[in-house]
View: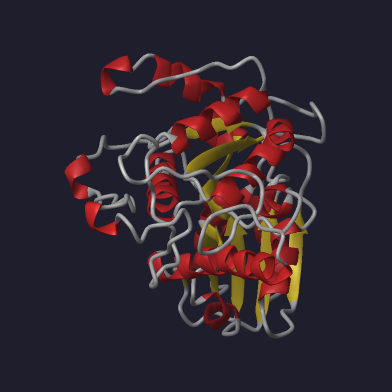
Length: 348
């Protein structure tokens, strides 16, 4: 699959302390990763769209157990086996909603071959600091593409501060004891003296951590899991707008379409047609200024390599009617700059 390179590269770097497992199937792969997370490790699993479908039940387990997990979805043409070597953006709603129950997870997206590392780091940081599964969406275009990339100095990246239990919590700790500020539960690695506990796929009491079928408790835990994800918006960057600051037309995209959309905006502005670009890397939760940005423009063109999944998601999240024009393409090929310009020209 387009995700295979991740295994190849990591398995070659045992000197970094990376443990790689090529499991017999997708379910075994993610369950192994969940076990690694439960044991106190940064755990990640990678696949493409059909693999996400197979992993969905286990992702729900990671959600209800509130374990840190990075799930990399290198999107390809679908459905089913589809066009396995080609690129699409057709897994977005699957990542957002493709699990049983109210099962919220963070979704972020890389947008260039060069920033895949940065967003993988952000995915790991969010997963570990907020004790949640995080989807990192890429696609076959990014996976097979290349661009100049300076190897980073890791000292320049922010520290990752996982919420491990501390000795002073003994006696008052419970599996779902939470930080009051961000609602993150504290992480007790199995074997830590004084912190024996159990977690799993059955709903737990918010205080004691024992299995509970109480209706009010289930509502409370459902609300807490959602609120924890919503609060992550306080820890991510605001949405940035590029291009002409005085434009009436805003082009919107997400993920791997960035290069084509940016080039189209540059060319349109050079031709005297004022437009701007808002490209989303953080999808769930959305940046806190999303509503403010979208409400400033008279015309909005949402471009994506699917039949309008992100457009539908945006509409559902805005408290006002969002009048959008859509440019959708499902040919397992990236946009051309000319396609984007032609669609935008209809709005001037």
